[in-house]
Length: 208
Image: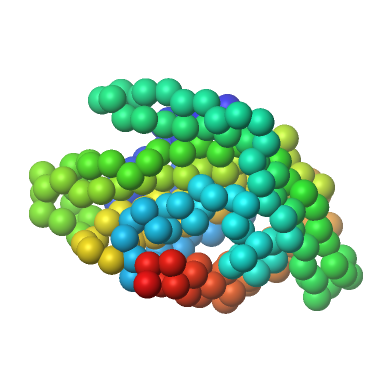
């Protein structure tokens, strides 16, 4: 399930992401990977993704957001805390194709790993063995949505110092059928050209 997937997900800097492999093995699946920096402490971008209710304030195509039900937690190996909760996130955008405008309200299973110290991986921006602060949030539409069988956002955060955080976003999309593949093209364009810049701007505003 989504929680198990988050449990086994690789840490930042551990190599190729699982979504890249899944995109090749699943029919009508696509993946996207983006890495960028924000001028903010790690808690700022982390809380932006955990606080689903504020998504409409900065995410370009998001129309609504909120938690559903109660949070539950667990303590993973090494005493690492993990939290889980369900959320509902509404979206809408114009595809610029025969599909016209599309929208839906998607139920995600949120799997949260709050900021904590981890041993730095090679190439991770810190010397080998040095402790760095990392966090992760995975939003998994376990039951799919109107246009796809799967939609998963995997966010990783690595502190690079005071007011500086590396953010890694991996996205997996699997369409119900080939007619909905243009939705992926629109999503990919919006993530790369709109959402990431909006994310950086919002993080800097909250840090200030």
